[in-house]
Image (tube, rainbow over all chains, first blue to last red):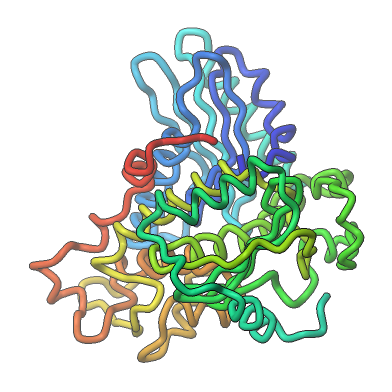
Length: 125
Length: 274
């Protein structure tokens, strides 16, 4: 963990039912800034690297499409888990990503989405 | 802040480097030396010379600062803790071991994160540059305090894991672009419109013929590693090109968009989460 002092910022998303892992990632370098995980959570470096790769590809797509839009969030549904990535603070530099992985059987996706959105909004207020 | 120019300071440090202490790769003498200093809870400075000159500073076995002549140091203007009025730039102010995060209470979380990252990234960037196969280290100097003691302590395991991950990413990028590859703006033929971020735009407008990612990073006081990745993204979009190798002619070589994977870098680095 590069910024252990940032761990506390992830505390709100731990309240999501079925929470397994949360990471803050520097989107430009893929570096994990902070992470919190449950015992059954996946390895933070691999999960964070996957999230950074996804955002990297979507950023290239957005660059090509040139619609003037920004990436608000990404939600991927696996057979057993949800994989959610959201830039913290739209249009802000540096680009910091919040990754949350939650158990699909125990998580209400809409509620989790709202919690992540609120958590990111609280970062800039 | 020291009154001695930064380049002069790192050159003086490098002059003490002993010949013959060459290292042969990442899993090498220098990493072993750094781990030993960490295990001993050392406080002081290890001068390193190689492609660039610089030093890594320790306090209680943890890395508190590093600088290299080939990477930008902490921004000259006050940022992070100092910009927020929450930290002194006085050398002695941080000698008590207090963590940077503790001084940022009350600041909006995003600004706190951005401030911590702005202070930490130059150190990680410098270590990434210093710890390479051509590096040599000098005698460890006990109790030398960092000239700009800004970073909250980082464990050696964390630093080395991140440096190894970055080296893996740079190895992936090497066939397309390195920090020292000359680049130039390119006008793609296949699409009239593109969308770039503000940091990418800052790179594009400064990319003249012969500019390198490292030169851009130095100009903009940004991470060399981060700038190299951003340049790679612009190469993938076709907005930059390596002179003599425009994207349209690179059919036989690796296509930029297929080169970089953070996940592959983690698995190649061993996936450590130290």
